[in-house]
Amino acid sequence: MYLLVIPQSLINILIPTGIVFALAAILGVLIVIVSHVFRVPVNEKKDALAAALPGANCGGCGFAGCDGYAEYLASGATDTSLCSVGGAACSRELASILGVEAVIAEPRIVRLLCQGTRGPDGKTSDRYEYRGTHTCHAANGLLGGAGACTYGCLGFGDCVEVCAFGALSRKDGIVKVDPSECTACGVCVKTCPKGLLQLLPASAEVGVLCLNTWPGAQTRKNCSIGCIGCQKCVKTCPVDAISMNGHLAVIDQAICTRCGACEKVCPTGSIGLLPH
Image (tube, rainbow, N blue to C red; front, side, top):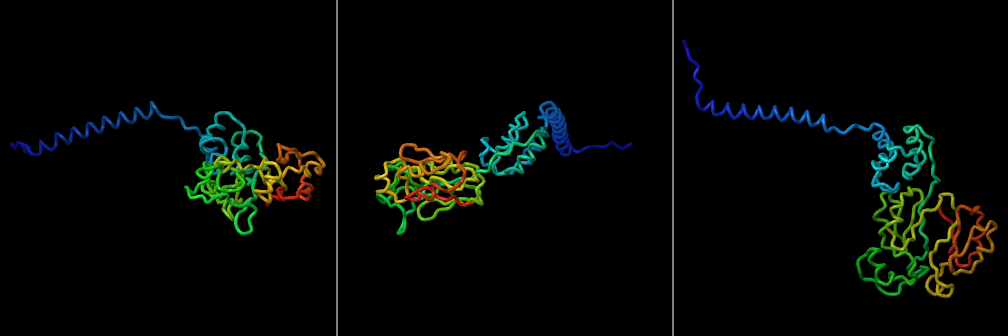
């Protein structure tokens, strides 16, 4: 008769190993139980809505990102027009998932309401040499910026930096908008410290590209292309789409018929054609 003698050294290894395997098995069972008890139900509708959105996460819809908008729609909302990046096609796809009629928003484009270029052939000039941090927000904090027109574009391009679609650039001391690349997300609008970037209907053909409310003489002194409040456009408009905000002409794009009469009579060129 033979007796199996297990060396003590092997016993010293097997016992801890067995304990570890037992603990692992117990923890595995606990993980399975916990995952079933605390599992988060999958919202298939929300996932489908999120997949239909472009994934830009620009915040133009008013939510932190596409996932937030998808959650909003999945909760029972039916406004499918909030994603300007996705446009009409995205709105229709969202509506199809929700089983509702698509809400199509009128396309819009960001416009810079300033034509005050600087340089040898510029329309305005600088009051002083700015040597601070090269951001619009920093420059605006020092007497409204170096420009002779304190309403004008500061030109450092804070908006260019935040545009995820490459629709903005800088030229001749001001920002330029490429309408073909603009998605109307509105992030740049929120960034401009002077409020010069505004969303206008894509169908708009003319606009008052100025926000200067100075009297005419002061405007002429500081910018050759600013609105001087002469009211010629107001008197010329056949549908009364133009009104005055102090010394500044304002076009109601909802009424405007795109006839172009105002652009032709503006003596300074502050009413300009909008590129498409």
